[in-house]
Image (cartoon, rainbow, N blue to C red; front, top):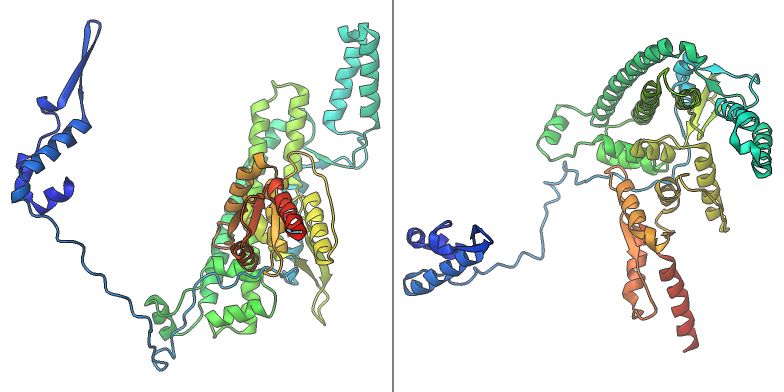
Amino acid sequence: VLRAMELNPSVCSQMPKWGSSDLSWSFGLGAFKFDTQSTSKLLEAAGRKLKSLERSLVWPRGHPTISQPPRVVSLNCAELKFQHFWAPPLTNDARCKSRALGAHPGASMWSKPLRDVEQKYVQQDKGKRQTSPGASLVSSALEQLKQSGTQAFTADGRSTLDRLLRELHGVKTPASGYLGPSLTLGKKVEALAKELENQRAEDAGKVEAAVRAATDLANLGNASDWLRRAGGIWPEIGFSSLVAAIMAEEPHASACLRRANPFLAESDLAKLRELVATSLFHTVRIGQVARAQQALQELRKEGNAGPELAVALRAQAVAEQLGAARHFLATAAGQAGSKRQEVRYDPRLLVFEFLCNIMLRESQVNLAKEFSSKAEAGKSVCQQMIMGEGKTTVIAPLLVLLLADGARLVCACTPAALLDMSRAVMAERFSSPVLPRPVVTFSFHRQVPVTPCLLVKLEAARSSRAAVVAAPSSVKSVLLRRLELLLE
C-alpha cells in the first residue's frame, strides 16, 4: 500500500482516512457502548481502493540489476609508501606474566591502594583482641541468653548455647583494623567521607592526565604525521590499544606498537607502559574508594541509634575496604647500579581488575595461579569454592584470559540451569575493546551428525582465543559418541 502511494501521489487524497465512520466498529457491554478504530479494516479498505484504481496506477518495473563487484583490486606500491593499514586492537596476545612498574618510591603504595587513609583512620588490634568485634558481641548476647533467656530452660537449649560459645571462643582472628570506639565514630565518619571524596577527585585528575599523556606519546610524530592521522591515512592509537599491548609478551608488544608508529623509541615505549599502568592503578583505586564510600554510607544509616552489633559490623566493613590489598605485586631488585627496588606486577590481572572494577582477593589470585601453572604443566587440578566467592564472575573469565593462548581451547563447563547466566557473564567480561573475545556455546548430543564442520568450529574458537561454554551433558555426549564410533 505504501509503495503504491509513493509511486502514485495523486491517489493519496482518495485513500481512506483513519478515524472515518466506515472504519470504526462498536460493541456493547451492558449499558455501555465502546467505539474502536480497526487497523485491519483500514488496510482492507485501502486494498479495495487500490484494486479499483489498478489500471491507472504506476507499478515498479522490477528491481535494478546489481553489477558484480570486481574480484581483483590493483594497488600501486608507490602510492602506498606512506600509508599504514592497521585496525585496533593492536594485538590479541595476553601472555605477559610480569612487568616492572618502575624504580621509584611511590610504586610500592599500589600493594594497598588506600594505605594512607587506613593509617590515618583505622586502628590496629595488634593482638589485643582475640576475636573480631562481631564475634565478641555475639558471645555476650549468647551469655545473656544462657543466663536469663527462655532457651536455657531446656537441656537441648543449654547444650546448644554451650556449643556455640565454645566454638566462638575457639575462633582466633589475626590482628585486624577497626575505626575505634563507637562514641567517636560520628566525627571520624564525616572526616573520612571528605577525605575519600578528595582522594577520588585527585585520582580522576591523575587518570585523565595519564591517559592524555599516553595517547599523545603513542601518536608521536611531526606535522606531516599529524596531518596524515587527522586525514585518516594513518591510524590514531587509542588508549584501549595501549592497554591491550601491555598484556602482550615481549618483543611482540613493542613490535606491534612500532608497527603502528615507527617513530617510537625504546625510552618512549618504557614511558608508555608506565603511564598506562599508572592510569590503570589509579582507576582501580577510584573503584575501591567508591566501595569504601558505599560501606561508609551504610554505617551512616545505622547511626548511633542502631544496635551495637550492627554498628560494629558496619564499621568493620569500612575498615576492611580501606585495608584492601593487592596480591599480585612483587618487589624485585632494580636495574644494575640502582639501589632502589622495582615493583613487578602481572599486567593481565591488573587489566582484569580495571575492566571488572574489582580488586582480586588473595584466594582468587592464588587459585588462578594454581590452575594456570597446572595447565601449563599438563596436570589436572580440582578446587572447591563456596557460593559467592566469584566462581562464575571472576575465576572462570580470568582463566579464559590466562589460558586461552591460541594453542589451547578453554571450555567452561557449567550446570545446564546456569548456562545462560555463565554465557552472559563471559560476554560481558570480553565485550570491551581492550579485550574482545568471542563467546561460543557448545551444544551436542548423540543424535547430532558428526561432521568435520564441528571440528572446524572448535579449531576456529581455539585460534581466536574464544571462551567456550558448555553443559555437562554436551561434554559427556561427545565422549559417548566417540565410544560408539570406535565400536562400530
